[in-house]
Image (cartoon, protein in one colour):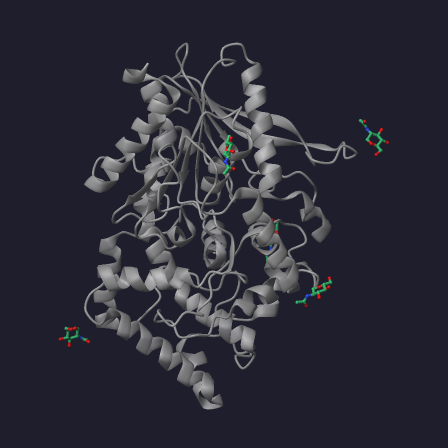
Length: 474
Ligand SMILES: *[C@@H]1O[C@H](CO)[C@@H](O)[C@H](O)[C@H]1NC(C)=O
Ligand SMILES: *[C@@H]1O[C@H](CO)[C@@H](O)[C@H](O)[C@H]1NC(C)=O
Ligand SMILES: *[C@@H]1O[C@H](CO)[C@@H](O)[C@H](O)[C@H]1NC(C)=O
Ligand SMILES: *[C@@H]1O[C@H](CO)[C@@H](O)[C@H](O)[C@H]1NC(C)=O
Ligand SMILES: *[C@@H]1O[C@H](CO)[C@@H](O)[C@H](O)[C@H]1NC(C)=O
């Protein structure tokens, strides 16, 4: 259940290629976990990493977890590295999906790294905000570079071609490995990577709108809009708020006249639709619209809407309590991804655009407040904007000077609005998969996937094999 709680909370700002442990999207989960039911053939390993790769004077180190699967490897096979993103890395990626298939077809050895601060790869004991300072894409890229150098110390792999694969934020990392370490990495699959950092990511909800328009049934959007406008009206009076609290089982002590609490309510309501678009299939959208017709809009995606107070029987839309109990949990690192959005990427999924049905009650400022309340008042607009500018300058936004990177996006995925949808060059093409959601291509190894998806996967593998010169291209 913990995963579900975390997911529900993080979906707001999370491009995670994670797997929702929830009936609705079980087909995604099953793909990666079912393959683990057999006897595992991977090893878990630990690699000593510098705490700070860019400060000579900092000599502290920590141990990064990674997985290795060697049984598919034959002499001259490539090294396939699945790059971990903003969650615990699942060894499932060694047994199904893109990394596995590529390794099988090219006699490769597979590795999967875990991103610093996530999963079991925690560099420091958490004592306060200052401990987050070593959390960044740049440090993580250096971790992966050190891993590759270490792998290449093994004479069996010293001359091997290296392919990196990542999805979502780790899709960015895969592309950026080619950008920053071209001498270590020969080819990359950058799947669903929102490579452009942006503060006001209003395009996300626009894309949710478009997907409902395209795949939903008649009037679905206007019904959603009616529901959200109704919430808005209820918020206008004390009496309305009382009714809303009853209707939505909101805790008596949640003061819904506080702007941030109201915004949290709207974000939480919208996240139901966001999740369905980000991880669902076209048919899920249609079904959702049909259900809505029968039962009014009702949350069905998440069975536990109250995620920061597990013991509670009511829905606690209390911004301050959420931050204090959850984000600022002194014994845990739950705020890691939030820290990266506040210092590097923004990605704030606001309702600023009027081309979406959720009304305008989720301002960018909500997310800025989250940064400041969680990490301190210095994490303000200025700092957030500077971080975003730095990231876009360093990684070159939508026009990175890279070759041998394939940028893959699902046509249903809201994150694709910050991704590369046009070929950067002949050697850095973009692939858009019709009717596919976030990271679909990395996990789809089952037989009944859509034809467009199968075609795309075939094409991605063709490109990678061509770039590393295996198979018919030798
Ligand atoms: C690490 O650096 C500190 C000073 O910054 C020094 O006292 C210590 O001996 C160093 N440790 C190692 C293992 O080099
Ligand atoms: C559902 O939609 C159909 C067609 O749009 C309409 O005829 C019907 O009355 C709707 N049912 C409900 C319960 O709103
Ligand atoms: C805080 O973190 C600890 C350790 O991970 C966890 O057991 C606890 O449930 C967390 N508290 C909240 C409110 O999430
Ligand atoms: C953010 O804080 C810094 C000091 O930490 C200050 O110089 C800057 O003006 C602040 N920016 C805004 C928008 O408040
Ligand atoms: C792109 O990179 C290549 C080699 O890595 C370099 O020669 C070229 O000048 C770069 N182009 C731009 C526009 O920076």
